[in-house]
Length: 54
Image (cartoon, rainbow, N blue to C red; front, side):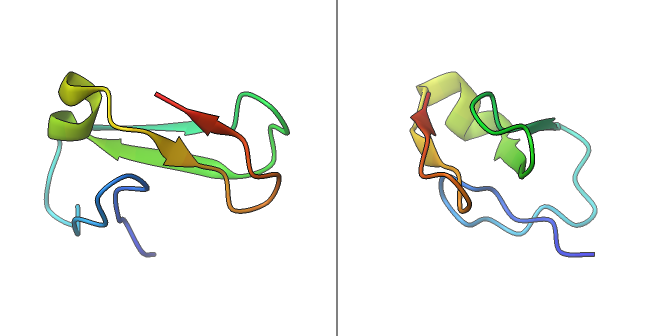
């Protein structure tokens, strides 16, 4: 399974300080964000519906 931050593309395999949640808009795609991007409020984009969020 690939674990990459949707905001910056950092490989998160072996990391434990990240979040994974369903897209708030479509609910079908998993969004994965690293600690740094969450803290900086970097945007992410859903690959399925195009929703963008902080």
